[in-house]
Length: 168
Image (cartoon, rainbow, N blue to C red):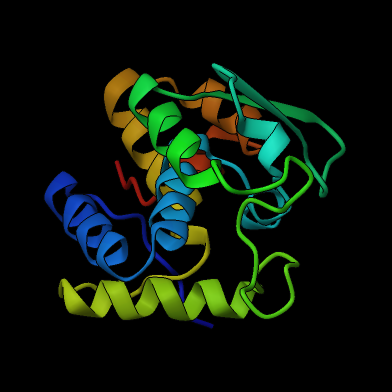
């Protein structure tokens, strides 16, 4: 089984965002929310328009744990969301399949991320990369592994550090 890595360099994150934005605002927004929220992909995919519209703080009940997780939307991200959802119904999924209107599938997200990563010279990228990238950069900024351990619902700080790719 392949171990996916966080995206460590800010420059690579921005390059992936550029690639994704060129192909689809939906894909760019999914990536951007993923690396800024620390949520599981399954929870991101089931976000609805009403969950993120006109909010500073988004609350999500995790499918895996039943716990409520919150994350803040920057004013810039709020503006992008507002533009993105302007023609969508509040009960629409935020990241719908164009074919079904249901959330896009995990395998589709995996392919989107891998294709974009290849274009910027990255490997070891998967759906957990979004969450790991969030954790890695949060840790660099704060050095607070206890908060991340709780957020990721992990048993020990050492498990969290390993998960986010920090080897002390």
